[in-house]
Length: 406
Image 1 (cartoon, rainbow, N blue to C red):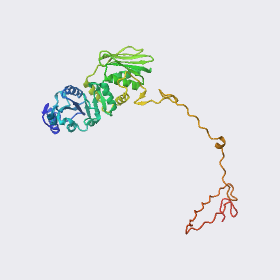
Image 2 (cartoon, rainbow, N blue to C red):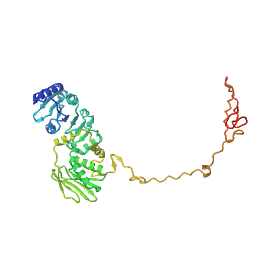
Image 3 (cartoon, rainbow, N blue to C red):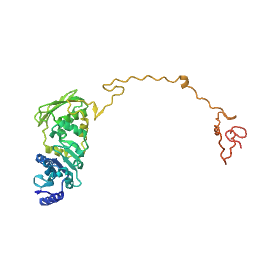
Image 4 (cartoon, rainbow, N blue to C red):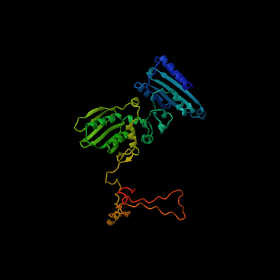
């Protein structure tokens, strides 16, 4: 069921959703999340098709935000909202709302989307292209628990990945990272079977392929070995070669669908590594809505290393590793030892403490109490205070040793 609304409001869109749901015979809402797609008029069809296919696995409310600010000054002053509500049919158990924001309203998309979010469910925002520089600071991105971008849809994917590394916030992810999930799984399983340490690695793929860059960074970060980037004819990623002490482990995919895994001492195997559609990538990202720690570690490790032919693992997560004890840092000469300071003469260091002055007669070894300092000239004695008589020596005549004389 499709309902077209012209010059409408968010309240009328909510009423149309309830009306369409009742007409379809499903009064209960069984959706698990809200997916917001921010795109333009020319690309919304492909993005909506991928999201609708992914919603078969994750029933959701799909809000497609299409911004049309206008070209002329008159169009830019307008503020009109057109909507199209789709329930049932191709959408299945999901709901789809196309929001066309005209004029000034295009700069306030969050105010239109906020009343349409499903209550008590997570929110995911996907930019198929032209993502903001800081997705977390975007007004729509602040509403979401996960923010999905795609560096391969930009003109300079390497620079885009570098920007993602600088502005990363827990919850950010990129479809270039999602594309290498099968590669990482196969390589991790292959290394579990061969316990020989990896000495170096080579990643082969198309030029300006962000997935090749991320896979090379992931290997360098995890294996702590140099990883070389080699440009191939494609499509996409074509091969990964790991050099070990027992031989070479090679995962080669020439046609973009079937790969061959070669390991020393074992027969060759065929692995299904078909290039996946965007709908499969979105469905994978919607399975887990918690922050991707592996992606975070990879992009932070790649800050300053993107675009290089060989990735060296001298530093870990941006911090230079500490040199071994007693070894100088790389590129630096060890400091000269400081001259030893002359020590004090032995007769002074071992000089015995001076003995205390002897006390009164009969007090062997006891020290006399210090006498009070003389009063300053011209000072008057305190009135009302009687002077105390001097105490007798406890060891003198008139009493046993240790007690005062009575």
